[in-house]
Image 1 (cartoon, one colour):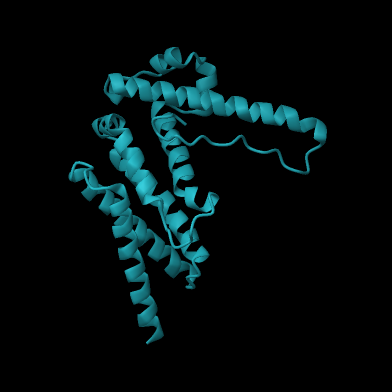
Image 2 (spheres, rainbow, N blue to C red):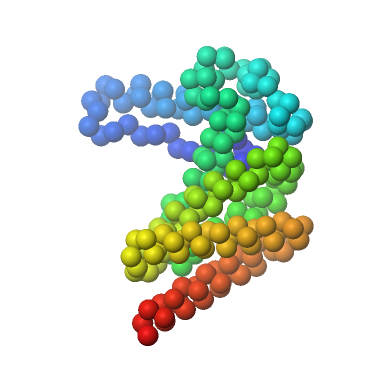
Length: 217
């Protein structure tokens, strides 16, 4: 995953406990090598997106910039679109689950302030994503990852509901979050991310309490 997408880096996958001891070092080395290769390719693509329109970037240019062979590239990705979306998925997976991994207060449903702060730091890259015509794909992936994470956060916060109802509520909150992000971007990213975070959580918990009151009546 490229540094422009996130400061977070995925940890190397841990070998399964049932594997023999002799197999573990080689497995770990392989996992780390794969992650490094993917990071290098993602970084190369992002660098090129700063320099030219996405549609004009070729796989060969990515390979030349990354110093990776063509066969290695196609072992992991179908094409440059697959590379880009894979990088975005890694980013959202890590960002959407950051609160849970860090043991944050369960009443915080999403790392809104952190996410907006990161966006403000990579404005040029965001502009390149918009110019690439892929922003809708990126936002759709983001809503999906954040919806799943919010579902988990609601459970951690002690919200009890039928799985379908909870999932629907989480998707609605994720949709509201990304609508709020659109508003923030349209305003030139000027509103303090912490203030937007507070706005989101006030709206979210007001809605949750209202629904709980209706169920209890």
